[in-house]
Image 1: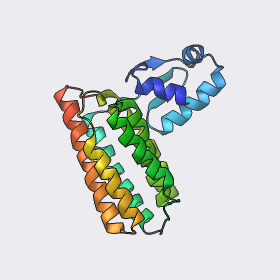
Image 2: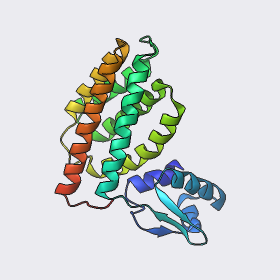
Image 3: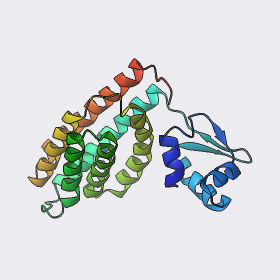
Length: 210
């Protein structure tokens, strides 16, 4: 599944394009059964549409879609930050979150945007896990994959995400200090700013459909 998902994020399977299972199987060097299983999972995540006897169609996303997705992600991740701060986690419990922040800071120093994006994704996944709400995890996982495609397209045309790193550190500190309201508001502000940056870039470069 990860191989097909990465082809979508990289644009090698373009939005709106159609592909047969046999074509994907040949391209990836595997049988059709695991390809079929992967496409069904990716369909649940909103990345493609399975069309009986016609293969798959890579999903398209409009600016309105992105705004709606970010609105949901903002609220659910902010809830996760709040709930994580209520659980009284120790610093060892938060070690994975801390490592993700350090990895982002290191990537920024090297101006390695791809490594930064990987660490940023790790931070958000761990934040939601720490919130401890399995339904939030499921919904966020589905929508975050759709956001990753748009972010991959804008990664090298956006400013260096220095503010993003500062926000992550503030959210981490609020969780560590047991301040639910602060964790929620700092994360909401962080996600709202990220949405504005992404949508403005898509508009500026006339990327009205992804």
